[in-house]
Image 1 (spheres, rainbow, N blue to C red):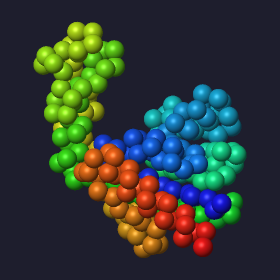
Image 2: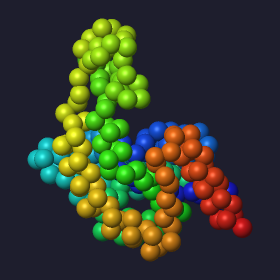
Image 3: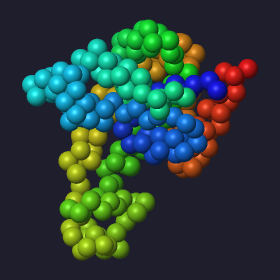
Image 4: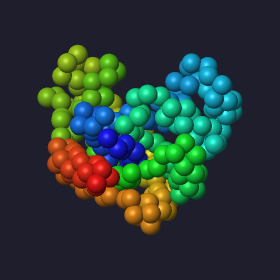
Length: 223
């Protein structure tokens, strides 16, 4: 069986986490989330984790070569043998080039980059509508409102909007995403491995489209 090495792309709020969970149920893919891996490496005090912590403690970005080394270390584990689903890296075309070179050295290559596209105004509505209670119960003013405004149905606690769910903050995050990712999308498009998905559809419809595309890629790779 050929391996499926995939990258999941999309703006904050596009539903990447939801789709990653579903795709792992469909295919034998290891979910490789770079943020989670870095935190785990720091917690485990591995050599790479200690190196990453030095930058994080200074408030600096962890360099690309350290992140790629963490990714390659993760890809050496047995559960990635049939493929992986990479989320959170690369974020720029420069990082994409560096990742391609690193994968070549371990005799692997990317099968596809999966882009879940959602218009900016839709993202703002999705994220700015979230409300949470102190105990972690989540609501949405449009899609899952509480029975009583600003009060949790479960424990009666007041609901609030997280700072990173405020419209101004969301639009700043989207501006960063747009500035960094447009060249990255172009890069994978030029390499003929980019596949686009309409993230405004229901999660089930997006999942069905992703699953069908990946199944087709696997069949084509095995011919």
